[in-house]
Amino acid sequence: MQIINISGLYNVSPQISVTDIELLSEKGFEKIICNRPDFEVPPNFQSNVIEKVAAEIGLLFEYHPLTFENMYAENIEKQMAFIEESKSPVLAYCTSGTRSAAIWALGQIGKMPKEEILKTTLESGYNLEGLL
Image (cartoon, rainbow, N blue to C red; front, side):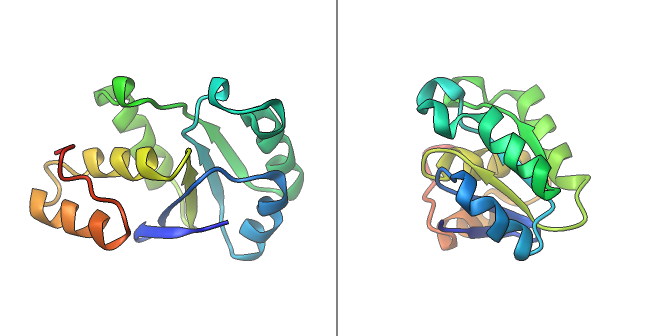
């Protein structure tokens, strides 16, 4: 599992598996946000499987499936609330981490200058120049 810090407590990664959840707990993560729709993955990687193991270990889990077509204001606000209500590290995942990085970037509009948002995501390995 590749964990990429975007900013502060917010981290992203490509798809995780149930075997990654214990490591997340050991590293002090509080919450997992699944940004990958279940229709994209086989049954053993679907949100209900990940959520069950996360709950058994004591991690919070949010299923917030995103596509680039549904990254509108309501979903951006919802993702930001998941992050802001956390006091410990949060991991959001999707296929590659790009959607999870993109929704964070969209949530920073009006809070940070565009150049700073793009620099932050680029330094984390995500070039979102075409997004903002």
